[in-house]
Length: 248
Figure 1 (cartoon, rainbow, N blue to C red):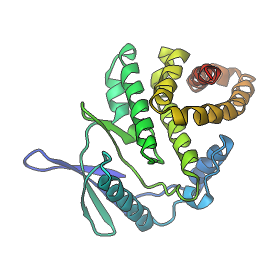
Figure 2 (figure 1 turned 90 degrees about the vertical axis):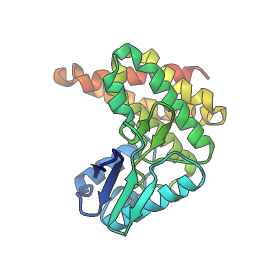
Figure 3 (figure 1 turned 30 degrees about the vertical axis):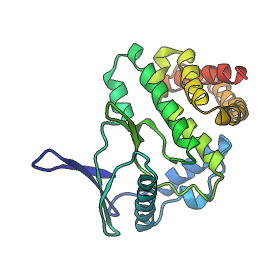
């Protein structure tokens, strides 16, 4: 968990320390089970968080490595093993989207997907590509939160496809009012920006779809679940995914 500070000159920084809650065993199991369910075999050691110093050190190393090759990430201001201080890189994508009317959200969603494709094309991966971990300062996207030690435990391509899924599912609440065509448009923005990844992404989603569609059918047996917001969002995403796969 990070906390912001603002200096007298208006400069904002973020501080993350080892003195914070870690993912519980139950939450770790949930992350692990969901990832395996969708076909991303995350190692248990990566899902289970037990060493806050190791997590913070991993994030510190990744921020330095990404900055060294010109990627847009927070600048490391200080690190002593227990505290990591970084620069501010703008408001988060989810915050900005919530500020917009539903009909004005899709261009920014598509731009974020295309930017993620470019990040992947340069051989990078995020590991936490939800909208809350992507920022936009009006000119460029940047990325935060690099704690997840998924590589080398997983193949790079697999983690990159997991990034796309994380982004899409994190947008579900915002994208549902726009309908399945918006889901398709976001996926298409990613695929169009990186043709090399498009085929692999379609194969991944085609493999994933029957599993999630089964969840939707089972949930329909419950009147309470069948009309829930969560299931409506899932069905919107699934329809958009199916249209994207059909575009081969």
